[in-house]
Image 1: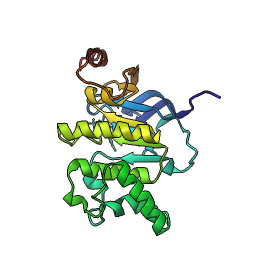
Image 2: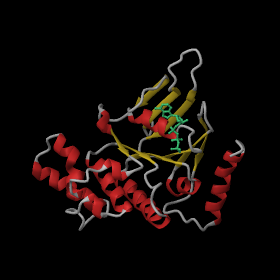
Image 3: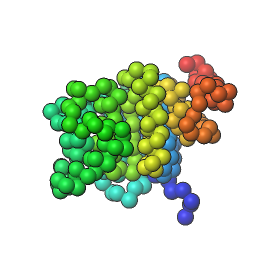
Image 4: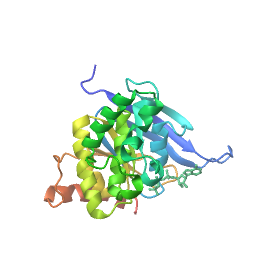
Length: 256
Ligand SMILES: Nc1ncnc2c1ncn2[C@@H]1O[C@H](COP(=O)(O)OP(=O)(O)OP(=O)(O)O)[C@@H](O)[C@H]1O
């Protein structure tokens, strides 16, 4: 048995949305991907290349047109995967408080009230929401709303977190602090994370491994890049800049 188990293995994955079988347009084609358990993996690529499509396939929201996807979790249903959307506004229920939003999935699973409360409290603390439990989403900042969304996903105890540009709509300072928070939470929970972004700096701040996608159509992961820098990562160092240049060079090869 390998020391580190694989969590996600995709072989020769392809996706086409076109119904016309004679001339299918492939959004994704020939995608190979292996993500280890506990790894922080970044899917990095230009706008429209198919990052969200690939993440949605891994989430089980979309079917592959070709290829084979293996998700290895001890949980056999979709609960093994938790999805954090780009917009917390559309993901949260505005008529529920922070703690009710976080406990919502548990309520649906008929977890007893006391246990629900305990679990919600734990994730409120973990995501830095202490003191905000009784507030409604409309009374929270964008960063706080994303914390609630993350807490709600974590409360369902997924082994794999799938995050689709979750900080894309935040201002630069909030975004930086959320990146730091996410690294802390990842290290405390040992989750496998797949994080989609088109921002090279964000990819290097967060990821252990970066899967670089080519421009679509027929996009695939052309290169994987191991980021060897220790956490927390310092953007001002020569090592960080060197890493940035190397990743950027992959895109320059494609004229982006
Ligand atoms: N349901 C769909 N039906 C038809 N085409 C789709 C559908 N979903 C996505 N596409 C197309 O697939 C391509 C990839 O879209 P996708 O949203 O996955 O890219 P992305 O890399 O996540 O983009 P962005 O960074 O802008 O969010 C786009 O050309 C898009 O128009």
